[in-house]
Length: 198
Ligand SMILES: C[S@@+](CC[C@H](N)C(=O)[O-])C[C@H]1O[C@@H](n2cnc3c(N)ncnc32)[C@H](O)[C@@H]1O
Image 1: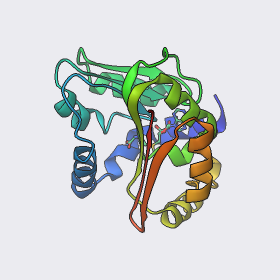
Image 2: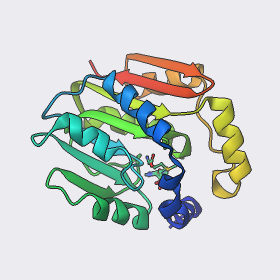
Image 3: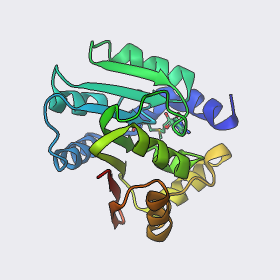
Image 4: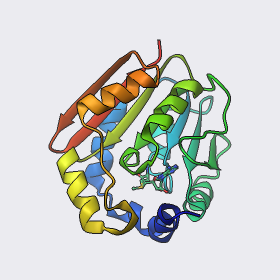
């Protein structure tokens, strides 16, 4: 395990406790703007203990499914234990090397995790590969870039330098990853990026 995996494995049990009811409500509203329909197949990159699973499950219904991906073994194990449902699975894997076939998902979502990915460009490329044409990649952080960088710097250790790309860098990553249409909404309290696979 590398230092970041060890770090997340050590704080995995605590991270989800920091999310407030307000955070969850904001998250739920953001997910609503994507108009998810029943039956969709969703991949949650850096799923942690599964904070997004319940929100997603209510939208994709029994006929859809959710696969969470996390590279920290204890965290992935906890997510699987928390959600023993037939249409939720958890895979321990690196976000930039996904063990899924081409076009397997309708939506790839990543909440509060993209800033931590060491290979962001490769991860966007992988997301493109596992999406079906018409699918979307959505990156959500409930904090602006500067605030997030400050929080990570204060936390220190292996996440000291974890940052979100600015709009120019993100655009370059999406382009290189083959997403020709994309958008970024940035405020002091939100970073929301969407890439469309045409
Ligand atoms: C801050 S937590 C957020 C977890 C979850 N999305 C949530 O909101 O509760 C970031 C998660 O990303 C995972 N992660 C970080 N880098 C990763 C990578 N390169 N591949 C897969 N998972 C990664 C960590 O193990 C951790 O569980």
